[in-house]
Image (cartoon, rainbow, N blue to C red; front, side, top):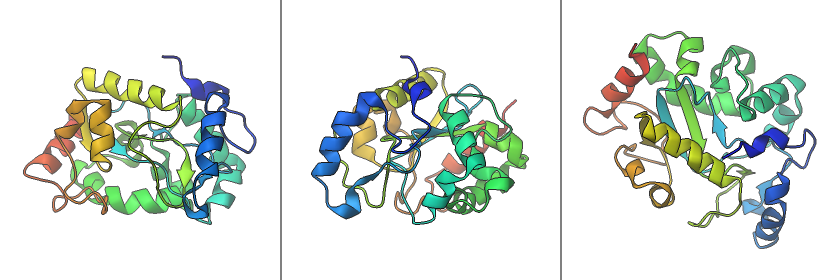
Amino acid sequence: MENPWLVLSDSSPFVLEIDRAQIQTYNSEQPESAKLVLESIPEPFIGNPETARVVLLLLNPGHKSEDKDAHSNPRFKEILFRNLQHVDQEFPFYPLNPALSWTPSARWWIPRTRQLIEATGLSLTEFSKRLIVIEWFPYHSKNSGLPVSPICDSQRYSFCLLKRLLDKGKLVVRMRSKSRWEQVDQRTSKHALKNPRCGFITKRNTEGLLFDRITEALTAR
């Protein structure tokens, strides 16, 4: 499937034409707290699928008040669009880019990956090449009232991306949304965090030897 994000407009509202009608209908039926925030650039995935060794699965990107400034920042905006277009960059998993440490995305991901980064011994640049996150749904919201069934057409690309990585034998770890991801592919039921609300990738929050398996996958030559 061709990457639909190649044609995303670079001005707000950030919504694909193939999704527009479905998103408008969805937002019209939601309370204010669950409406999709179209002033933020969608993040259906973060990372480079060509170099990733480990895949993390989530529900959809959240929204904080600080995102307004972040997503209007020219440098951050450029990095987000390069990611959407699968253009190579120094930090494919851009929340680990030290220049972006001020963004809500970095402030969420840095503590959740800290133990894993330390366990691998990899540099931030190398680690960021080996990790990819795929969201079940690409658009931001303050709170999630998302249904179990897909909402918009662009989700199919994320699902195709996941299946391609599974077929390549990449290690896939589900962080959130068990029922939704299992409908996409039953293979996603194999590995998951203990506490999906926590989101920290640590020994305490993984079953058995999963943390070690993640570390090994990230460091394998």
